[in-house]
Length: 159
Image (tube, rainbow, N blue to C red):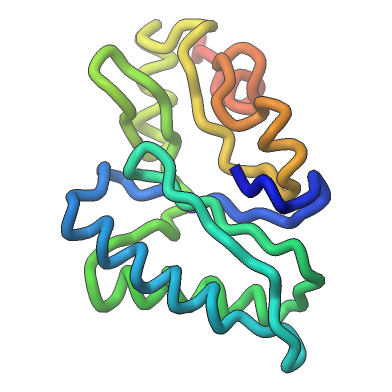
């Protein structure tokens, strides 16, 4: 993944509540490809790329220096996907985890209820959406067991 990028490349991870259909995947690819091809920071081209993983997650990467405005422009692509195509990857309240049939996304409150009901085990794989450097992602800090994640620190069983 991003073979030509260093571990210090910046990344942003976006997740869609539901797996993308083939048509939705095509829309997302077209929008992001168009953005990455024309991405600029202070009028200079950004060396950027993206990957779509598991038909649900977009990893956007920039090897070049990016500023607030160029980061905002990347978010605008996801706002367009949400507003024009009803494909929302900006919901920060979602927790992604593997269940017996695939990947689920729940609100933090719903996820807390599963923890309280002992339906999330210490080895349940959760998706850490917080890495900002490609090296952290490559080091395996994206798909991790609940007990070893920030989720395990935040979502504790209620007494």
